[in-house]
Image (cartoon, rainbow, N blue to C red; front, side, top):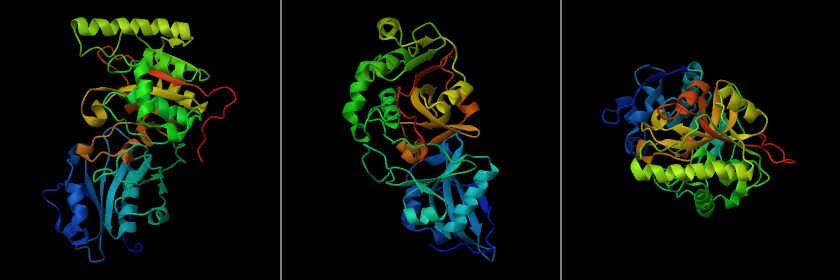
Length: 366
């Protein structure tokens, strides 16, 4: 990897990326295979930009990087850097610092661990249970800005469109040491979903009960600030009613299992406090802000950095170039997460808090 020239400007130039109108200086330094990958997905929803560093003449580019990010998040992702890679990456980091972001990530298409480490990036653990293919990188790297980051749980992408609640509960318990990493797989995902589902979604009370029944030593609290069935807005008539019956049964199950239902709204400072004492919080959000469609979805809140909470999102959108590198160790500002987790018309919040079993050590950052 070439070293950065002393006269290369740290901030470089930033401009929107249009794969149909690629700048001539980019064509000169980027391999054709890289440009083909950049154009293979419709990245427009993730604000794709080229961050480029001019060469000594100022007439062309020495290096450039394609960067993207999910909307309403506190990171930026390097898809690839080409040409003078160190200069391009330094320019991306400078832009991220200027914007007050919590981290920069880097997909491992064209960079290895040693070169990434030389530029301040640490490897992220490879995802479990994910088929390797042309749209999902095998490796990824992260550089935290202004903090030491958060302890890293394993990443696992849900294998269906409806098992997000089960997956984030499993990830939380792996991080807590209650489940071996090797058992984070599809049979475990579907088994926990089967015990928690309201067909096909997992509502907060049913999910909390399933977690408690699966791991009786783990303290569980359900936070739900409405006294009605939830996640039923898309149903009507009998389809809505029988699911409501199941949710009322979940409340009876919670009482029998000793799972507290806290009717107060769980605040973002409350989530930070829970994380600080070693708890994990399964949080119900809408995907509208990050993915563009208003679908209820479970994420895991497991870390906190200045200005943002760190989540695991078990779902990614291949069509937009969204990969596990985006969804893993994902920082979201408190205000953005507050908005994402205000659900349906009455803006309730649903969450499941999982405490550390007595005698266990809370997860620590390596």
